[in-house]
Amino acid sequence: MENKGKSVLIYDGVGNFCTSLIRWVMQTDKGREISMVPYQSWWAEQWLSDNGMVKEKCNMVIYLSHDRIYLRSSAILRLFRDLGGLWKITGILYLLPVRLRDAFYKIISGNRYLLFCRKNSCAIPGSGSGSCQHTESGSRISINHYTTH
Image 1: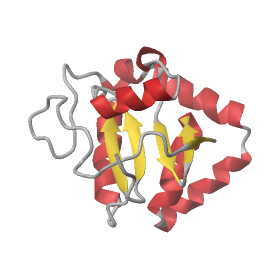
Image 2: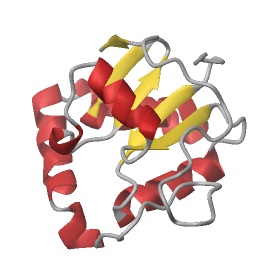
Image 3: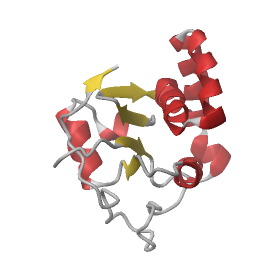
Image 4: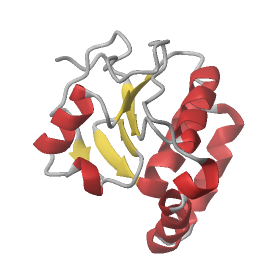
């Protein structure tokens, strides 16, 4: 698989909160620079395995951008930065200690099903079927191309 310069957002495809985030990113990412891949896809499972992560223990958004891996709050802040425009302003939150940002992130992510409900299958952009068969939004993505940040 190749990485054609796109960033990759790995998300929980069965959570309403993440699904809403993905829909928003699709509307905001005018240049189509960000590929979105649910944890439930083959690609994400392979990438997680290759990077020593267990899918069942990954209670976070993972963002692969600029040859780096961003986790939790850093993933969201980098995503906003890459989307550009006024979203870059959120970069000021990088001034907060990672532990504080991630503590807030973990409260939201740990309660996302309670707060925003959960689906029986993942809603994947472009699939229309609601099943977990779509993996790469038509682009090729390198699994081993990124380094941890």
